[in-house]
Length: 288
Image 1 (cartoon, rainbow, N blue to C red):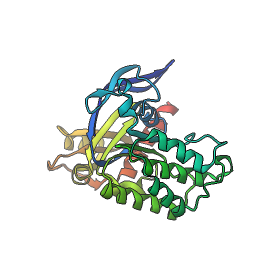
Image 2: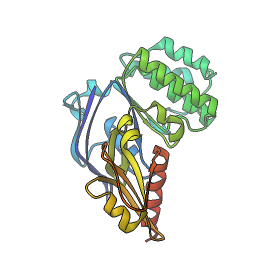
Image 3: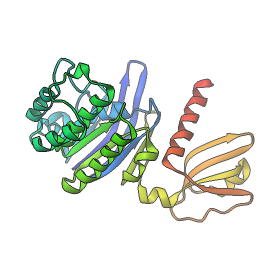
C-alpha cells in the first residue's frame, strides 16, 4: 500500500491543525508517527481513516483519493485513543460488528487474542477498565487484517507486560501478514526499536521524515556557543535549534558529512530526546 499526502491542511474555525503537509509512505512497514500533544497527529490520522475531510489538499492510497474510494477505506483500520466501541455492546458484539466491516477479518486470531488479554466476550464495554478497552482495540486492529492499520496511543491503561505483548504481536503480525502499520505513541523509548521509518509532526507541519537507519547514522546534536555552533552547522539541514544561557543546541541531519568546529560537542539524539526538545520549544513559545 502507498499513501500519498499532497498539500494537506485542516482548519477548525481560527485554529490550523495541519498546514500544507506532504509526504509519501509505502508498505509493508512499521512507521512511527510522532509529535508532541497538539502537533496534529490525531487530526491527520482521522483524515487518513476518512472520518473527516481536508480543508485543502488530498490523501491518496494507491493513487485513489480516499474520499472517492469506499473499498480502500474498508482496508484502513484506525484504532483511536478512545471512542472505538459503543459502551452498551459486549466485547463479542464489538468484534462481530467489526467483522462485517473488514473483508479480511481473522476470527480465529480475534478469539486467540481474547484469551491472551483475558477478556470475557460477554462483558459490556462500559464495565471494562481502560486497559481492557485498549486491549479490545488492539485485538480489533490486528484481527482486521487491514492493509493500513493505525494505532493511536493504543495501550492506555495497560501495564508493561501487556504493552510488551502488543509489541511482540506487532512484530509477529508483520512477519505473518505484512502490512503498513502506523503507530502513534508517547512511549517512544519502548517502541522506537519497532520503527522502520519515522514521521514527526510539529505544530501542524511535517518536521521530519527519515528511515531509522538515517536517524541513527545522521541525526546529531551540536552544542557549544552560538557563534561556534552556527559556524559548524553551515550548509547542514537544521531540524531544531535552541539557545539557553549563551549555549546553543542544534539538531542537524548530517547526511554523512563531517561536522567540525572549535569548542563544540557532538552527541547522538534519541527519538525521545527529540520530542522533549520540541515540547520545550512549544512551551517556550506559549509562554511568550
